[in-house]
Image (cartoon, rainbow over all chains, first blue to last red; front, top):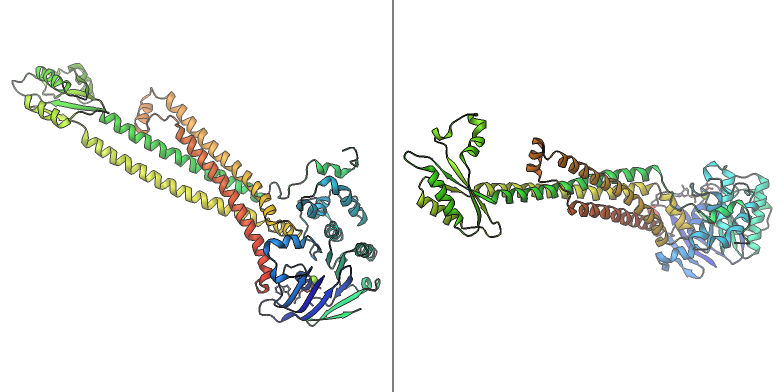
Length: 219
Length: 322
Ligand SMILES: Nc1ncnc2c1ncn2[C@@H]1O[C@H](COP(=O)(O)OP(=O)(O)OP(=O)(O)O)[C@@H](O)[C@H]1O
Ligand SMILES: [Mg+2]
Protein backbone atom coordinates (compact mmCIF):
# COMPACT_ATOMS: atom_id res chain seq x y z
CA UNK A 1 0.00 0.00 0.00
CA UNK A 2 2.89 2.38 0.82
CA UNK A 3 6.31 1.96 -0.69
CA UNK A 4 9.54 3.90 -0.06
CA UNK A 5 12.44 3.40 -2.47
CA UNK A 6 15.90 4.80 -1.71
CA UNK A 7 14.38 7.77 0.01
CA UNK A 8 16.73 10.50 1.22
CA UNK A 9 15.74 13.60 3.18
CA UNK A 10 17.73 16.61 4.21
CA UNK A 11 16.62 19.89 5.72
CA UNK A 12 18.36 22.74 3.95
CA UNK A 13 22.10 22.27 3.80
CA UNK A 14 22.32 20.11 6.90
CA UNK A 15 23.38 16.46 6.85
CA UNK A 16 20.81 13.96 5.69
CA UNK A 17 18.19 12.95 8.24
CA UNK A 18 17.27 9.91 6.18
CA UNK A 19 19.56 8.14 3.74
CA UNK A 20 18.63 5.36 1.33
CA UNK A 21 15.50 4.35 3.19
CA UNK A 22 13.47 1.60 1.51
CA UNK A 23 10.51 -0.23 3.01
CA UNK A 24 6.94 -1.19 2.41
CA UNK A 25 3.88 -0.89 4.58
CA UNK A 26 1.44 -3.60 3.55
CA UNK A 27 -2.28 -3.29 4.06
CA UNK A 28 -3.52 -4.27 7.51
CA UNK A 29 0.03 -4.39 8.88
CA UNK A 30 1.15 -3.23 12.34
CA UNK A 31 4.60 -1.79 12.99
CA UNK A 32 6.57 0.25 15.45
CA UNK A 33 8.93 2.95 14.29
CA UNK A 34 11.64 3.60 16.82
CA UNK A 35 15.05 5.15 17.27
CA UNK A 36 16.75 7.71 19.47
CA UNK A 37 15.44 11.23 19.81
CA UNK A 38 16.30 13.26 16.74
CA UNK A 39 16.72 10.14 14.60
CA UNK A 40 14.02 11.30 12.19
CA UNK A 41 10.86 9.47 13.27
CA UNK A 42 8.67 12.55 12.97
CA UNK A 43 10.29 13.39 9.64
CA UNK A 44 9.56 9.92 8.30
CA UNK A 45 5.92 10.18 9.41
CA UNK A 46 5.66 13.58 7.70
CA UNK A 47 6.86 11.95 4.49
CA UNK A 48 4.16 9.31 4.95
CA UNK A 49 1.57 12.04 5.50
CA UNK A 50 2.74 13.92 2.40
CA UNK A 51 3.42 17.10 4.34
CA UNK A 52 7.06 16.80 3.25
CA UNK A 53 8.53 15.65 -0.01
CA UNK A 54 11.72 13.61 -0.10
CA UNK A 55 14.97 15.09 -1.31
CA UNK A 56 15.76 11.88 -3.15
CA UNK A 57 14.12 8.59 -4.02
CA UNK A 58 10.48 7.82 -4.67
CA UNK A 59 7.43 7.27 -2.52
CA UNK A 60 4.23 5.67 -3.64
CA UNK A 61 1.04 5.94 -1.63
CA UNK A 62 -2.03 3.84 -2.35
CA UNK A 63 -0.48 2.85 -5.66
CA UNK A 64 0.39 6.37 -6.81
CA UNK A 65 3.77 8.06 -7.09
CA UNK A 66 3.39 11.09 -4.79
CA UNK A 67 5.44 13.21 -7.19
CA UNK A 68 2.49 13.08 -9.58
CA UNK A 69 -0.18 14.01 -7.06
CA UNK A 70 -1.80 17.38 -7.70
CA UNK A 71 -2.30 19.90 -4.95
CA UNK A 72 -6.08 19.63 -5.05
CA UNK A 73 -5.94 15.85 -4.66
CA UNK A 74 -4.04 16.04 -1.38
CA UNK A 75 -7.04 16.53 0.92
CA UNK A 76 -8.74 13.52 -0.59
CA UNK A 77 -5.60 11.39 -0.19
CA UNK A 78 -5.18 12.58 3.40
CA UNK A 79 -8.70 11.51 4.25
CA UNK A 80 -7.43 7.95 3.97
CA UNK A 81 -4.74 8.62 6.58
CA UNK A 82 -5.20 9.30 10.29
CA UNK A 83 -2.43 11.17 12.11
CA UNK A 84 -1.66 11.67 15.78
CA UNK A 85 0.76 14.61 15.86
CA UNK A 86 3.47 14.63 18.48
CA UNK A 87 2.21 18.10 19.48
CA UNK A 88 -1.49 17.07 19.19
CA UNK A 89 -2.66 20.14 17.20
CA UNK A 90 -6.11 20.40 18.70
CA UNK A 91 -8.31 23.42 18.05
CA UNK A 92 -8.53 25.29 21.34
CA UNK A 93 -11.90 26.90 20.72
CA UNK A 94 -13.67 23.59 20.12
CA UNK A 95 -14.76 21.09 22.72
CA UNK A 96 -13.22 17.64 22.98
CA UNK A 97 -16.26 16.23 21.25
CA UNK A 98 -16.01 18.71 18.39
CA UNK A 99 -12.29 18.20 17.93
CA UNK A 100 -12.84 14.49 17.50
CA UNK A 101 -15.78 15.05 15.16
CA UNK A 102 -13.86 17.60 13.05
CA UNK A 103 -12.61 15.17 10.35
CA UNK A 104 -16.18 13.97 9.82
CA UNK A 105 -17.52 17.50 9.81
CA UNK A 106 -15.11 18.74 7.13
CA UNK A 107 -16.01 15.72 5.03
CA UNK A 108 -19.57 16.96 5.00
CA UNK A 109 -21.03 14.14 7.11
CA UNK A 110 -24.26 14.67 8.98
CA UNK A 111 -23.87 14.96 12.72
CA UNK A 112 -26.81 12.74 13.61
CA UNK A 113 -24.97 9.90 11.88
CA UNK A 114 -21.78 10.05 13.94
CA UNK A 115 -22.78 11.52 17.28
CA UNK A 116 -22.83 8.25 19.17
CA UNK A 117 -19.63 6.98 17.46
CA UNK A 118 -17.75 10.04 18.69
CA UNK A 119 -18.96 9.75 22.26
CA UNK A 120 -18.35 5.98 22.29
CA UNK A 121 -14.77 6.51 21.16
CA UNK A 122 -14.22 9.24 23.74
CA UNK A 123 -15.63 6.90 26.39
CA UNK A 124 -13.21 4.22 25.32
CA UNK A 125 -10.20 6.50 25.72
CA UNK A 126 -11.50 7.49 29.15
CA UNK A 127 -12.77 10.95 28.31
CA UNK A 128 -16.49 10.23 28.55
CA UNK A 129 -16.88 12.92 31.19
CA UNK A 130 -14.83 15.50 29.29
CA UNK A 131 -16.93 15.79 26.13
CA UNK A 132 -17.47 19.50 26.63
CA UNK A 133 -14.08 20.43 27.97
CA UNK A 134 -11.89 22.71 25.89
CA UNK A 135 -8.32 21.53 25.14
CA UNK A 136 -6.58 24.28 27.16
CA UNK A 137 -7.99 22.82 30.39
CA UNK A 138 -7.02 19.23 29.57
CA UNK A 139 -3.88 17.51 30.87
CA UNK A 140 -1.16 16.47 28.42
CA UNK A 141 -2.32 12.86 28.49
CA UNK A 142 -5.95 13.87 27.96
CA UNK A 143 -5.04 16.00 24.97
CA UNK A 144 -3.08 13.10 23.56
CA UNK A 145 -6.10 10.84 23.82
CA UNK A 146 -8.28 13.43 22.09
CA UNK A 147 -5.71 13.59 19.29
CA UNK A 148 -5.78 9.79 19.01
CA UNK A 149 -9.57 9.70 18.93
CA UNK A 150 -9.58 12.33 16.17
CA UNK A 151 -7.14 10.25 14.11
CA UNK A 152 -9.23 7.10 14.51
CA UNK A 153 -12.72 8.44 14.14
CA UNK A 154 -13.10 7.90 10.40
CA UNK A 155 -11.45 4.45 10.34
CA UNK A 156 -8.51 5.47 8.17
CA UNK A 157 -6.69 3.02 5.93
CA UNK A 158 -3.42 4.01 7.59
CA UNK A 159 -2.85 5.35 11.08
CA UNK A 160 0.33 7.30 11.77
CA UNK A 161 0.85 7.87 15.49
CA UNK A 162 3.79 9.98 16.68
CA UNK A 163 4.63 9.12 20.32
CA UNK A 164 0.97 8.42 21.11
CA UNK A 165 1.74 7.20 24.61
CA UNK A 166 4.37 9.78 25.50
CA UNK A 167 2.21 11.55 28.07
CA UNK A 168 0.16 8.76 29.68
CA UNK A 169 0.78 6.27 32.47
CA UNK A 170 1.64 2.63 31.59
CA UNK A 171 -1.90 1.49 32.28
CA UNK A 172 -3.41 4.00 29.85
CA UNK A 173 -0.61 3.26 27.37
CA UNK A 174 -1.64 -0.40 27.34
CA UNK A 175 -5.26 0.61 26.85
CA UNK A 176 -4.37 2.83 23.90
CA UNK A 177 -2.22 0.10 22.40
CA UNK A 178 -5.23 -2.22 22.59
CA UNK A 179 -7.21 0.40 20.73
CA UNK A 180 -4.61 0.48 17.96
CA UNK A 181 -4.59 -3.29 17.75
CA UNK A 182 -8.36 -3.37 17.52
CA UNK A 183 -8.30 -0.79 14.78
CA UNK A 184 -5.63 -2.85 13.03
CA UNK A 185 -7.79 -5.97 13.25
CA UNK A 186 -10.63 -4.11 11.58
CA UNK A 187 -8.37 -3.37 8.61
CA UNK A 188 -6.21 -0.32 9.28
CA UNK A 189 -2.45 -0.39 8.75
CA UNK A 190 -0.80 1.13 11.83
CA UNK A 191 2.59 2.84 12.29
CA UNK A 192 3.38 3.77 15.89
CA UNK A 193 6.49 5.90 16.41
CA UNK A 194 7.76 5.45 19.94
CA UNK A 195 10.85 4.98 22.03
CA UNK A 196 8.91 3.25 24.77
CA UNK A 197 10.53 -0.21 24.91
CA UNK A 198 7.96 -1.43 27.42
CA UNK A 199 5.20 -0.67 24.97
CA UNK A 200 6.89 -2.48 22.10
CA UNK A 201 7.49 -5.59 24.20
CA UNK A 202 3.75 -6.07 24.60
CA UNK A 203 3.18 -6.80 20.95
CA UNK A 204 5.02 -9.07 18.61
CA UNK A 205 5.06 -6.60 15.74
CA UNK A 206 7.44 -5.49 13.05
CA UNK A 207 10.02 -2.95 14.27
CA UNK A 208 11.49 -0.27 12.03
CA UNK A 209 14.53 1.18 13.74
CA UNK A 210 16.07 4.46 12.66
CA UNK A 211 19.71 4.98 13.53
CA UNK A 212 22.30 7.26 11.95
CA UNK A 213 19.98 8.07 9.06
CA UNK A 214 19.52 4.40 8.23
CA UNK A 215 16.46 2.28 8.65
CA UNK A 216 16.69 -1.34 9.78
CA UNK A 217 13.66 -3.57 9.86
CA UNK A 218 13.17 -6.48 12.23
CA UNK A 219 10.32 -8.94 11.91
CA UNK B 1 -35.38 12.51 16.21
CA UNK B 2 -37.12 9.84 18.31
CA UNK B 3 -33.98 7.73 18.51
CA UNK B 4 -31.74 10.62 19.50
CA UNK B 5 -29.95 9.56 22.64
CA UNK B 6 -30.88 11.80 25.51
CA UNK B 7 -27.38 12.77 26.44
CA UNK B 8 -25.31 15.85 26.76
CA UNK B 9 -23.86 15.95 23.29
CA UNK B 10 -27.29 16.13 21.71
CA UNK B 11 -27.02 19.89 22.02
CA UNK B 12 -24.18 19.91 19.52
CA UNK B 13 -26.57 19.28 16.70
CA UNK B 14 -28.41 22.42 17.72
CA UNK B 15 -25.49 24.79 17.82
CA UNK B 16 -22.07 23.54 16.72
CA UNK B 17 -19.12 25.76 17.49
CA UNK B 18 -18.19 27.60 14.32
CA UNK B 19 -15.01 26.32 12.73
CA UNK B 20 -13.55 29.82 12.80
CA UNK B 21 -13.67 31.20 16.37
CA UNK B 22 -16.47 33.75 16.53
CA UNK B 23 -14.65 36.69 17.99
CA UNK B 24 -11.19 37.23 19.24
CA UNK B 25 -9.17 40.31 19.99
CA UNK B 26 -7.81 40.42 16.45
CA UNK B 27 -11.33 40.30 15.01
CA UNK B 28 -12.54 43.10 17.27
CA UNK B 29 -9.55 45.26 16.46
CA UNK B 30 -10.21 44.62 12.79
CA UNK B 31 -13.84 45.70 13.17
CA UNK B 32 -12.74 48.87 14.92
CA UNK B 33 -10.12 49.73 12.31
CA UNK B 34 -12.66 49.11 9.56
CA UNK B 35 -15.30 51.23 11.32
CA UNK B 36 -12.89 54.16 11.71
CA UNK B 37 -11.63 53.99 8.14
CA UNK B 38 -15.16 53.66 6.73
CA UNK B 39 -16.28 56.63 8.81
CA UNK B 40 -13.45 58.78 7.48
CA UNK B 41 -14.04 57.63 3.91
CA UNK B 42 -17.78 58.37 4.10
CA UNK B 43 -17.12 61.79 5.63
CA UNK B 44 -14.72 62.56 2.79
CA UNK B 45 -17.28 61.44 0.21
CA UNK B 46 -19.88 63.66 1.84
CA UNK B 47 -17.52 66.63 2.07
CA UNK B 48 -16.53 66.34 -1.58
CA UNK B 49 -20.16 66.10 -2.67
CA UNK B 50 -21.04 69.13 -0.55
CA UNK B 51 -18.18 71.20 -1.94
CA UNK B 52 -19.18 70.27 -5.45
CA UNK B 53 -22.79 71.20 -4.86
CA UNK B 54 -21.97 74.51 -3.17
CA UNK B 55 -19.57 75.40 -5.94
CA UNK B 56 -22.25 75.01 -8.57
CA UNK B 57 -24.82 76.92 -6.52
CA UNK B 58 -22.44 79.88 -6.10
CA UNK B 59 -21.95 79.91 -9.81
CA UNK B 60 -25.61 79.89 -10.71
CA UNK B 61 -26.60 82.45 -8.09
CA UNK B 62 -24.01 84.91 -9.21
CA UNK B 63 -24.49 84.38 -12.89
CA UNK B 64 -28.24 84.90 -12.58
CA UNK B 65 -27.69 88.59 -12.17
CA UNK B 66 -25.94 91.51 -13.83
CA UNK B 67 -25.86 95.14 -12.78
CA UNK B 68 -25.86 98.44 -14.59
CA UNK B 69 -24.02 101.07 -12.68
CA UNK B 70 -24.72 104.75 -13.41
CA UNK B 71 -22.39 107.36 -12.00
CA UNK B 72 -23.83 110.76 -11.22
CA UNK B 73 -22.53 113.85 -12.96
CA UNK B 74 -23.19 117.57 -13.04
CA UNK B 75 -26.40 118.50 -14.89
CA UNK B 76 -27.31 114.90 -15.31
CA UNK B 77 -30.75 113.57 -14.43
CA UNK B 78 -29.87 110.26 -12.93
CA UNK B 79 -33.49 109.18 -12.39
CA UNK B 80 -34.30 109.51 -16.11
CA UNK B 81 -31.11 107.67 -16.98
CA UNK B 82 -32.05 104.85 -14.66
CA UNK B 83 -35.45 104.44 -16.26
CA UNK B 84 -33.83 104.55 -19.69
CA UNK B 85 -31.25 101.94 -18.78
CA UNK B 86 -33.98 99.74 -17.32
CA UNK B 87 -35.95 99.98 -20.55
CA UNK B 88 -32.96 99.19 -22.75
CA UNK B 89 -32.00 96.19 -20.66
CA UNK B 90 -35.54 94.84 -20.49
CA UNK B 91 -35.87 95.03 -24.25
CA UNK B 92 -33.20 92.32 -24.68
CA UNK B 93 -33.98 88.69 -25.15
CA UNK B 94 -32.98 86.55 -22.16
CA UNK B 95 -33.49 89.33 -19.60
CA UNK B 96 -36.33 88.34 -17.31
CA UNK B 97 -36.42 91.41 -15.15
CA UNK B 98 -34.70 94.77 -14.72
CA UNK B 99 -35.15 96.57 -11.45
CA UNK B 100 -33.98 99.97 -10.29
CA UNK B 101 -32.53 100.05 -6.82
CA UNK B 102 -34.47 102.92 -5.27
CA UNK B 103 -32.94 105.70 -3.26
CA UNK B 104 -34.01 104.30 0.12
CA UNK B 105 -32.69 100.85 -0.75
CA UNK B 106 -29.39 102.38 -1.80
CA UNK B 107 -29.30 104.19 1.50
CA UNK B 108 -29.79 100.89 3.33
CA UNK B 109 -26.97 99.35 1.30
CA UNK B 110 -24.64 102.19 2.19
CA UNK B 111 -25.75 102.53 5.78
CA UNK B 112 -22.84 100.55 7.22
CA UNK B 113 -20.41 103.04 5.68
CA UNK B 114 -22.26 106.32 5.79
CA UNK B 115 -24.56 105.87 8.76
CA UNK B 116 -28.24 106.69 9.08
CA UNK B 117 -29.99 109.98 8.37
CA UNK B 118 -27.96 110.90 5.37
CA UNK B 119 -29.42 112.68 2.40
CA UNK B 120 -28.19 110.73 -0.56
CA UNK B 121 -29.43 113.17 -3.12
CA UNK B 122 -26.72 115.51 -1.94
CA UNK B 123 -23.98 113.00 -2.50
CA UNK B 124 -22.55 111.76 -5.78
CA UNK B 125 -23.58 108.14 -5.15
CA UNK B 126 -23.72 105.76 -8.14
CA UNK B 127 -27.06 104.05 -8.68
CA UNK B 128 -27.83 100.57 -9.83
CA UNK B 129 -30.18 98.69 -12.11
CA UNK B 130 -30.22 94.97 -11.32
CA UNK B 131 -30.90 92.74 -14.29
CA UNK B 132 -32.16 89.20 -13.83
CA UNK B 133 -31.16 86.75 -16.48
CA UNK B 134 -32.70 83.60 -17.83
CA UNK B 135 -29.83 81.19 -17.18
CA UNK B 136 -30.89 78.76 -19.86
CA UNK B 137 -31.06 81.49 -22.46
CA UNK B 138 -28.52 84.14 -21.43
CA UNK B 139 -28.67 87.48 -23.26
CA UNK B 140 -25.86 88.94 -25.32
CA UNK B 141 -24.08 90.90 -22.59
CA UNK B 142 -21.86 92.72 -25.05
CA UNK B 143 -24.85 94.04 -26.99
CA UNK B 144 -26.62 95.21 -23.82
CA UNK B 145 -23.41 96.86 -22.63
CA UNK B 146 -22.90 98.72 -25.91
CA UNK B 147 -26.54 99.80 -26.19
CA UNK B 148 -26.65 101.19 -22.64
CA UNK B 149 -23.29 102.85 -23.03
CA UNK B 150 -24.33 104.57 -26.24
CA UNK B 151 -27.49 105.94 -24.69
CA UNK B 152 -25.98 106.86 -21.31
CA UNK B 153 -22.22 107.44 -21.39
CA UNK B 154 -22.08 107.41 -17.57
CA UNK B 155 -23.38 103.85 -17.40
CA UNK B 156 -21.42 100.60 -17.33
CA UNK B 157 -22.68 97.06 -17.39
CA UNK B 158 -21.12 94.61 -14.96
CA UNK B 159 -22.13 91.08 -15.93
CA UNK B 160 -20.11 89.55 -13.03
CA UNK B 161 -18.15 87.52 -15.58
CA UNK B 162 -14.87 88.17 -13.83
CA UNK B 163 -16.37 87.04 -10.54
CA UNK B 164 -18.03 84.02 -11.99
CA UNK B 165 -14.86 82.96 -13.79
CA UNK B 166 -12.81 83.32 -10.64
CA UNK B 167 -15.42 81.44 -8.65
CA UNK B 168 -15.63 78.68 -11.22
CA UNK B 169 -11.91 78.13 -11.19
CA UNK B 170 -11.81 78.27 -7.39
CA UNK B 171 -14.72 75.86 -7.08
CA UNK B 172 -13.13 73.51 -9.59
CA UNK B 173 -9.82 73.60 -7.74
CA UNK B 174 -11.61 72.89 -4.47
CA UNK B 175 -13.43 69.96 -6.05
CA UNK B 176 -10.20 68.58 -7.54
CA UNK B 177 -8.46 68.83 -4.17
CA UNK B 178 -11.44 67.13 -2.56
CA UNK B 179 -11.38 64.31 -5.09
CA UNK B 180 -7.62 63.89 -4.62
CA UNK B 181 -8.09 63.65 -0.84
CA UNK B 182 -10.93 61.19 -1.39
CA UNK B 183 -8.65 59.02 -3.54
CA UNK B 184 -5.97 59.09 -0.84
CA UNK B 185 -8.49 58.17 1.85
CA UNK B 186 -9.87 55.34 -0.28
CA UNK B 187 -6.34 54.04 -0.93
CA UNK B 188 -5.63 54.16 2.81
CA UNK B 189 -8.95 52.38 3.39
CA UNK B 190 -8.08 49.60 0.96
CA UNK B 191 -4.57 49.11 2.36
CA UNK B 192 -5.72 49.22 5.98
CA UNK B 193 -8.51 46.75 5.39
CA UNK B 194 -6.24 44.36 3.49
CA UNK B 195 -3.42 44.43 6.04
CA UNK B 196 -5.69 44.38 9.08
CA UNK B 197 -7.56 41.39 7.64
CA UNK B 198 -4.30 39.56 7.02
CA UNK B 199 -3.15 40.43 10.53
CA UNK B 200 -6.34 39.07 12.04
CA UNK B 201 -5.94 35.88 10.02
CA UNK B 202 -2.37 35.31 11.17
CA UNK B 203 -3.59 34.09 14.56
CA UNK B 204 -5.69 31.48 12.77
CA UNK B 205 -2.79 29.76 11.05
CA UNK B 206 -3.05 26.68 13.27
CA UNK B 207 -6.76 26.31 12.46
CA UNK B 208 -6.09 26.44 8.72
CA UNK B 209 -3.34 23.86 9.08
CA UNK B 210 -5.37 21.46 11.21
CA UNK B 211 -8.37 21.69 8.89
CA UNK B 212 -6.12 21.06 5.93
CA UNK B 213 -4.53 18.05 7.62
CA UNK B 214 -7.81 16.43 8.63
CA UNK B 215 -8.81 16.45 4.98
CA UNK B 216 -10.74 19.68 4.41
CA UNK B 217 -10.55 21.04 0.90
CA UNK B 218 -9.06 24.49 0.33
CA UNK B 219 -12.44 25.70 -0.86
CA UNK B 220 -14.15 24.57 2.33
CA UNK B 221 -11.55 26.23 4.56
CA UNK B 222 -11.57 29.45 2.55
CA UNK B 223 -15.39 29.47 2.68
CA UNK B 224 -15.40 29.30 6.47
CA UNK B 225 -13.02 32.21 6.86
CA UNK B 226 -14.56 34.22 4.07
CA UNK B 227 -17.97 34.14 5.71
CA UNK B 228 -16.62 35.18 9.10
CA UNK B 229 -14.57 38.03 7.66
CA UNK B 230 -17.43 39.21 5.47
CA UNK B 231 -19.49 39.78 8.60
CA UNK B 232 -16.61 41.45 10.46
CA UNK B 233 -16.07 43.77 7.49
CA UNK B 234 -19.77 44.48 7.01
CA UNK B 235 -20.30 45.20 10.70
CA UNK B 236 -17.36 47.61 10.87
CA UNK B 237 -18.36 49.37 7.65
CA UNK B 238 -22.00 49.71 8.76
CA UNK B 239 -20.93 51.25 12.06
CA UNK B 240 -18.54 53.67 10.35
CA UNK B 241 -20.90 54.56 7.49
CA UNK B 242 -23.86 54.86 9.86
CA UNK B 243 -21.92 57.23 12.10
CA UNK B 244 -20.99 59.37 9.09
CA UNK B 245 -24.60 59.60 7.92
CA UNK B 246 -25.77 60.38 11.45
CA UNK B 247 -23.25 63.19 11.56
CA UNK B 248 -24.51 64.65 8.30
CA UNK B 249 -28.10 64.44 9.53
CA UNK B 250 -27.22 66.27 12.75
CA UNK B 251 -25.34 68.88 10.74
CA UNK B 252 -28.31 69.34 8.44
CA UNK B 253 -30.71 69.64 11.36
CA UNK B 254 -28.51 72.27 12.95
CA UNK B 255 -28.15 74.16 9.67
CA UNK B 256 -31.89 74.24 9.11
CA UNK B 257 -32.66 75.46 12.60
CA UNK B 258 -30.09 78.22 12.26
CA UNK B 259 -30.99 79.27 8.74
CA UNK B 260 -32.64 82.42 10.04
CA UNK B 261 -29.68 83.52 12.13
CA UNK B 262 -26.73 85.40 10.75
CA UNK B 263 -24.31 82.47 11.17
CA UNK B 264 -26.81 80.22 9.51
CA UNK B 265 -26.97 82.43 6.48
CA UNK B 266 -23.19 82.66 6.34
CA UNK B 267 -22.85 78.90 6.52
CA UNK B 268 -25.55 78.43 3.92
CA UNK B 269 -23.80 80.86 1.59
CA UNK B 270 -20.57 78.95 2.01
CA UNK B 271 -21.79 75.40 1.86
CA UNK B 272 -25.06 75.56 0.02
CA UNK B 273 -28.16 74.40 1.82
CA UNK B 274 -26.58 71.32 3.41
CA UNK B 275 -29.38 69.03 2.40
CA UNK B 276 -28.16 65.45 2.37
CA UNK B 277 -28.45 64.47 -1.21
CA UNK B 278 -28.83 60.93 -2.43
CA UNK B 279 -25.14 61.22 -3.29
CA UNK B 280 -24.03 60.77 0.30
CA UNK B 281 -26.19 57.68 0.72
CA UNK B 282 -24.89 56.23 -2.52
CA UNK B 283 -21.31 57.06 -1.52
CA UNK B 284 -21.74 55.46 1.89
CA UNK B 285 -23.31 52.39 0.34
CA UNK B 286 -20.36 52.20 -2.05
CA UNK B 287 -17.85 52.43 0.83
CA UNK B 288 -19.67 49.71 2.79
CA UNK B 289 -19.85 47.41 -0.23
CA UNK B 290 -16.17 48.04 -1.00
CA UNK B 291 -15.08 47.23 2.56
CA UNK B 292 -17.19 44.08 2.83
CA UNK B 293 -15.92 42.86 -0.54
CA UNK B 294 -12.32 43.66 0.39
CA UNK B 295 -12.37 41.77 3.69
CA UNK B 296 -14.03 38.79 2.03
CA UNK B 297 -11.64 38.63 -0.90
CA UNK B 298 -8.58 39.27 1.27
CA UNK B 299 -9.63 36.52 3.68
CA UNK B 300 -10.08 34.08 0.81
CA UNK B 301 -6.78 34.90 -0.86
CA UNK B 302 -4.88 34.80 2.45
CA UNK B 303 -6.31 31.42 3.41
CA UNK B 304 -5.64 29.95 -0.01
CA UNK B 305 -2.09 31.27 0.13
CA UNK B 306 -1.55 29.87 3.62
CA UNK B 307 -2.64 26.44 2.42
CA UNK B 308 -0.39 26.82 -0.59
CA UNK B 309 2.52 27.58 1.72
CA UNK B 310 1.75 24.58 3.92
CA UNK B 311 1.82 22.35 0.84
CA UNK B 312 4.87 24.12 -0.51
CA UNK B 313 6.83 22.65 2.41
CA UNK B 314 6.25 19.32 0.88
CA UNK B 315 7.78 20.39 -2.39
CA UNK B 316 10.99 21.77 -0.95
CA UNK B 317 12.06 20.53 2.47
CA UNK B 318 14.85 23.10 2.57
CA UNK B 319 12.21 25.77 3.00
CA UNK B 320 10.91 24.30 6.23
CA UNK B 321 9.85 26.85 8.73
CA UNK B 322 9.33 24.54 11.68
N1 LIG C 1 11.92 21.74 10.07
C1 LIG C 1 13.16 21.33 10.31
N2 LIG C 1 14.20 22.06 9.86
C2 LIG C 1 15.45 21.65 10.08
N3 LIG C 1 15.77 20.55 10.74
C3 LIG C 1 14.79 19.77 11.20
C4 LIG C 1 13.43 20.13 11.02
N4 LIG C 1 12.66 19.18 11.60
C5 LIG C 1 13.50 18.29 12.11
N5 LIG C 1 14.78 18.64 11.88
C6 LIG C 1 15.94 17.88 12.29
O1 LIG C 1 15.83 16.57 11.77
C7 LIG C 1 16.25 15.63 12.72
C8 LIG C 1 15.15 14.61 12.94
O2 LIG C 1 14.06 15.27 13.55
P1 LIG C 1 12.74 14.48 13.93
O3 LIG C 1 11.81 15.45 14.54
O4 LIG C 1 12.28 13.75 12.73
O5 LIG C 1 13.28 13.46 15.04
P2 LIG C 1 12.46 12.44 15.94
O6 LIG C 1 13.04 11.11 15.71
O7 LIG C 1 11.02 12.60 15.72
O8 LIG C 1 12.85 12.95 17.39
P3 LIG C 1 11.97 12.85 18.74
O9 LIG C 1 12.04 11.41 19.17
O10 LIG C 1 12.69 13.74 19.69
O11 LIG C 1 10.61 13.29 18.41
C9 LIG C 1 16.63 16.39 13.97
O12 LIG C 1 18.03 16.51 13.99
C10 LIG C 1 16.00 17.72 13.78
O13 LIG C 1 16.80 18.73 14.35
MG1 LIG D 1 9.44 13.24 16.81
